[in-house]
Image (tube, rainbow, N blue to C red):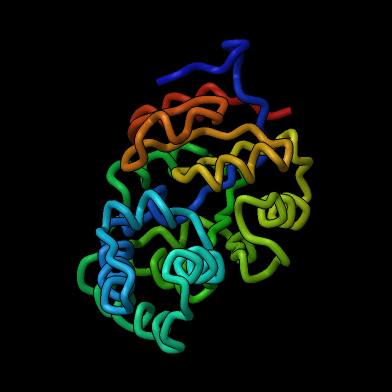
Length: 226
């Protein structure tokens, strides 16, 4: 774990959680499906390569990157098939990230929300399936589909903070993707890199990096409100 530069408590009135890979253990599942569909479309991709290239991206960004690499358009129905299979597999296999429920419960009523590149349906469905949905208030789930630009632009995090009526500098973001870290920093927020799946060096721009929920719990426990 890499500490904050000033070794002081995190100044936070709002904790913003990414969803996939931070709250729900979905990244291997989702990227395995995506990699297979991209390979079938003519762009050979492994699940590991998909994680490296597309982690934290919106579907529009995935299409943009994949079509640039392929040099051709992807099948029009590829992402519909992706979501159909993903939702089916989620229903049978999706679980929370180990220890994350304890982290959420330890926030003791502190404001928290979700800001994810996933669709609103995917966010709500995944949190419902894993039993985490009740740990967030109504109106505290934010999707990149609600803003003009997804991560790595700061739009989604700024939208979440504005809606929750918290200044950006009083927000702490928990992110597992380089794009998410970049977005949080651009928004003027403190960011904790969650390296349960992502290599530590890819989250080097975060203010602090933790490797699991136990370490995240320790870090958030040291944060302070006004």
